[in-house]
Image (cartoon, rainbow, N blue to C red; front, side):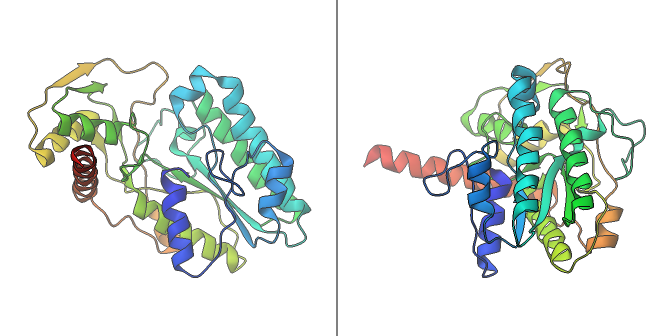
Length: 296
């Protein structure tokens, strides 16, 4: 499972619920592909709800392989919705979207109902997925759209994502490459994101109808400031190497968390400094385990 899915699965099991997972990288019987209708129907059978997190989840991956991105994020979402509609239990569906749907916002902080104007393939695929999910309400499904924003917080995350990449480079004494030092984002700890997803799942269980909602802190942090904070927390002397922004990246985003607070009584509780400190501690512990294994 990915960063959010793994943490959410643990939280749901801790609440006493069972999970039927579907993941390309899992061992059987959980292995499957959301582009495959039989795989999805098998996973959905008997479920009361679906949290759809599967995706080509990186902006750069979408740019490198647009067809695969669209087939997974849009056609795969259609497959999930078709399975839910066909299921006798009509499970509710939570669709994980992204702040990329807003593109380069004209006003900050960004409200949940701001115009959708994606600037890359990944963002456009998420807008299309959102429309499918909201349109499925006409077929009787209870659905929700949640937009996540720069979620971080696990040593098992993709190593080249900005937060773990900075942290690992600092711990290893390597340069921190910053593509656009003034680019500014809203970094949300995975435990906060999971708390918001649980709140949405409970709302759907109660039969509530929710508008699209983003889960974020409302606090902007530039990539340059992020790199500096990582160096401070690690005590590293690694240099910061500044490079131009990538042409397909959004340069500025942070959101208004009011809707999530009003509808879900949810607020991000983990400041970036604390979340980074946790991650750095986890990475240090992992490095220590690897070193002990090599000595054994």
